[in-house]
Amino acid sequence: MGLRRKARELAAKTLYALDFREIDPEYREYGMLSGYPELMEQVAKLDRLQNQARVLDFADDLVKNTVINLEQIQAQIGKHSENWSLEAMSKMDLSILNIAVYELMFTGTPAPVVINEAIEIAKKFCGEGSVSFINGLLDSVHKELLAREELEGLPG
View: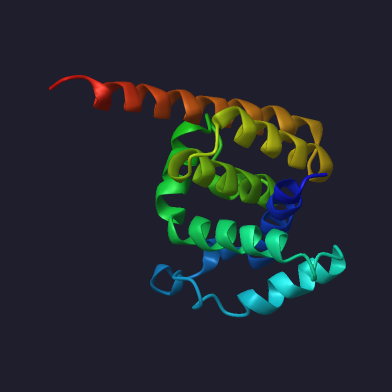
């Protein structure tokens, strides 16, 4: 398994453990998440990743930026999750989706890589129905983002 996959798994498990959906939006900025650094350390230790700086740095970046952009990310998830509220989703599904939608919206990581990584992580931690749901939702978000990019690229 590659370093980035390990980091994405660590980030998803950390977000799951944080259950940050209940955090007051005023305190969402990095460093203000109560117990976050210690929690990631504990999860990394369980996965025997505590000495892998590149994994920890990438996972930290994913968690930090996902939380900072959570409102926009979850608006996209909500828009594309036909008949599912965020509250009704499995917390692990939502953790994986939050990270993947962050990557689709805010990084230059190619969409097929982001979607495949999310699917592989879902296969490991979620049920079969979750894998299909995550795949479909991320594909839908990706298509919307592509359409938006094309519109923005048109001469005005």
